[in-house]
Length: 383
Image (cartoon, rainbow, N blue to C red):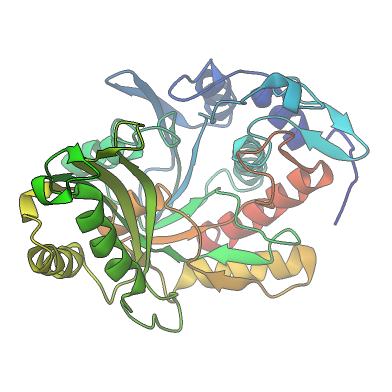
């Protein structure tokens, strides 16, 4: 791993963005700073605000295939400041490492993208095709008024994306060793079982809501959903929260609540999971109405295509390595873009410290990532 801390333009911009405390859904001026740079490079700038969320749409070129560079300026809260050895919004460089909230997720990627676009535009001012940026401040939050809303607004104008490169931190051990070419779907459920509270010494006079709930949850946890495939791991089920009781030792709980999540591959759907769970609820005497469902995103994948080939070639040119294609991890804003028919991949720095105290990346990797991004853009838009 490179630890060269030379202040490249990409590293300087990354540090400037990290110093802006843009805790979701705040942008803290990040998009304005990026927009100024892109305007100078010949991009047409449009600020799109939906609800309380700032979004940026910028495009250069007027016709031909559209390559979109996508990312977010919002970051998760830093947590207790005493847990950080370097202040989260100071963008310190120490022993070759860039520290700060957003260093990996994902202000360094945005800086690398902007500088790559600047260099590409300077070298290819009359490039065929269109190069765009879609940047939101709503990725770490509800993700309602961000990328999802922008994509819908673009669709109303008849604007569709051909390729989308998302700057999410994808790398595992070395820069560019992993490219996300898809993501699993995410389905959430809130289970609320209504029983009858009573004294533990007289269970015949009560209905223990927790007992019924535990039996159902144990069955769901033991269920084999599927085997996955060559691109996707098996569907997984997890109970994330479980509450019941009054806190007293001698009271049977009359209400039990659980929050659950499925990360599912294309072998499953919302409908197939709901149907199975409702059938098991019926078997345990729990009404289907006891569950409230929320779909966070459907699974998506780009199996082949020019974007994957350009990404592989650009990584090989900079690192000499062949990246692994992966669909592991959580959701990303790619779930809102892929349904439009665009090829979507995610490529960014190492993800081993994201959302942690002392989030960091190798400072030299910012410039290297920018070179990879430039290689992808050049391969897709300079032919």
